[in-house]
Length: 401
Image (cartoon, rainbow, N blue to C red; front, side, top):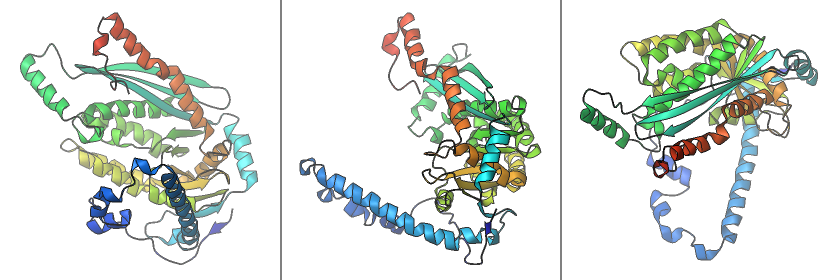
């Protein structure tokens, strides 16, 4: 595989500001906030949709043209110089993957069932005294193996057995009054993160214990926020760290892929890749550190998590690939020792979906988890339970997620 290298420029440093300055906002809006708030500049509904559609089309076209210009700059002045960046991994660079290697990966690794993919789904219902959550996970291989597991949990916000029920109720009301649409910004995040943490832990536990194949493939990032923080639960951290240690540090043949936009800076680099190319961008250290900075920890636990995160950040890398000319770029995280191999496995599987480039195994695992959990009928089950309890009037919309 050919590898591109040259000595051009250093990557720009990332600022540490958490709040946008006025100048940054004006640059983003291409004008001042005052003009943005001036409704006289807004088009009225009586003006029709023609202007809206025209301006939208022009804006999208201009954005695509700018992306094309940026792509050439990135290929010549960033991708070609990845190996010279500070703290770059030894495998940093761009690789052209020949078709025969992709065919070999499908024929010798994927289709014989040497890769196990795992994904999970969850659904929840918020009652007045507690939250019911159901979680399902699925393991799938191309050799025909498909296993699903599911479980249901009940978190009690209000315990009728409390010694001081009035005082306990006041605490519950205080906590619930802080609930907002931003789940991770309130005390209720403990419940949200705990549910996500259980699902993430179950996925990784299944990959470790039941995914006995040569390669393992997961969804999301290897060590997500909900596991490194424990969702506010110290026992969750104690249980998660050994699991992550065993799966991510002692094992090397694994790859994780996010399904959403994720890091836009890295996606911008990946967007400059040509079909059939993969790149190793950087170590996993910045990604893990960003997760650590978002967490809140019990006394003494931050140092423990940071020690693990330091080792994980050095042992992992972040890369990207473009499977076909029709597919958008995809990011992946892998062990540094097997990064290029992991990228080839993911790209070979992604090529089975030419329009997406996202691994088909993970799509099948997601579908299997949803089917096994019965997620499409979860809301109906909740409504039926209320009806049987003759409390249909309490079943409000928005409580099922």
